[in-house]
Length: 393
Image 1 (cartoon, one colour):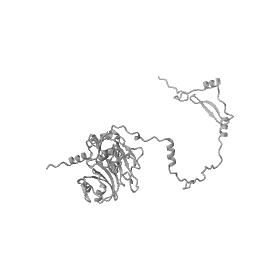
Image 2: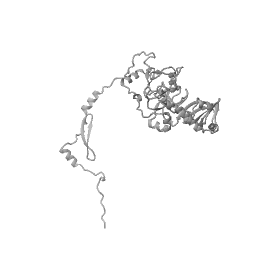
Image 3: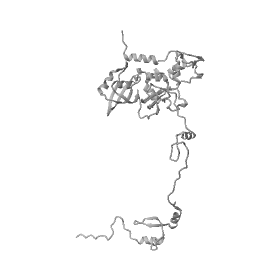
Image 4: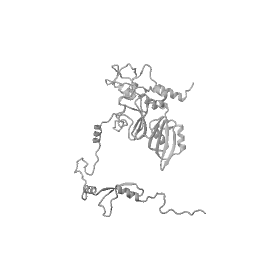
């Protein structure tokens, strides 16, 4: 008996779950590719009789469709296949990774911008887990990337309460069994210790339900904060909490590689839909948004919205009238031309009444005679008579 290598077995399982069927593709997969729902939701629609192929309602997802078939949901035709797109989302704490919740708790899809297409999450993050979450409009790609057989590394930063050594974390590389569930190899590194808390970096490839919390709980640690910082080649980086960033088509194609592109059937040639860009906001819409903002309770406004008498600024003292002062300055102002010590003429303005002893400067021929009679001294020459030199014998 020849045993198959574990990598070969994982590759065979992944190929069986992702390869397209001959003679078209499954109806649930076609609906997921159109970005209307996940494959699981599409199967529920089919079981409810909401899906029809060429006018005939179906109740089993075991049907293949081609491009020549006409598929409708509740009488509405399924839109054409969209270009495969991938988004990076910084999930905050306190949000569920689901479309709807029976208990009315907030979900990530209720917080996404409205201009984005219908997206499907690649895997899930717990209610109190934050960090990087991949979103895509291609259900087949989402299924491929979340499979453990894909082997993409998921890295987490963990803050935990308790104590552990690096040797105990190194033992996780051989896997661990907790409550009858087998977890694969885990790479763990102790970053720093802060009192009774510590920070650990973990890297896993399976991503089972609550895997990080269960594994660290088996070591006596209580997780108080869990942040996913990377998923495969995609990093959280400086993406702000609650922000969404789209991966460029060229980068996505390069990171997936030809093999994953062929397995998922990703389409990068279809033009983007018109709703791909955020719709421009008009000035009227901005004013309406401002009116919808919650008003701030000021000291002159009651909490119930009743407007009191508006506040007015009070002036203390008499108001100064500067017009009379400006008129007085304009009457007493006079322009003159002076000569500096180097003989350059400088225009000046004088204010106030002239002094009786102040004689006006000479003008015309008198000014030229006055300047001709003055003795000019070069600035590089000392004043006074030149010293005599004794003559040589």
